[in-house]
Figure 1 (cartoon, rainbow, N blue to C red):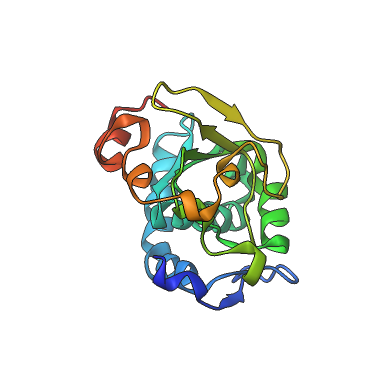
Figure 2: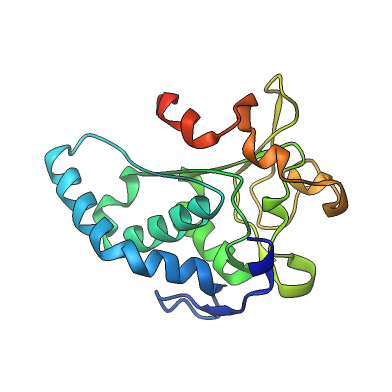
Length: 191
């Protein structure tokens, strides 16, 4: 992922003026979206009272965000059923993307960051113009104390950005909630 941090932007497939996203993230979603769309639509018909939760860790978080946005755009009537939870999500796109995403799904999205996890710091915003979308919930320590960051697309100094990139690392990326692998933890969460 860090090697790919300098990847180029590409226009958001949904045609939002000025909105660009990381090309690799977009390609990963493009590869699976038709299959995903079919399965979600079938499940939404079978379970109309359920929420549609897009969940992901790391690259999976970026994919969850892009998939949820595309699904919300393609299925306006189901938009209110969507919830998005990401853990250790990298920056996905530029400011125009972050603002559009916030407008569409900002009240339904929770971007969880943990201590000095390096992944929320990439790709770099200062050099390449990547921006996070809100709402960040920054877990401060292993006891689970947290800070809810302001609902803006700028970096909040009380969230993950409080750690200078030089002080971040991979250990906190793979130990969310004190678990060595978030993929083993996520099935235990009650949504």
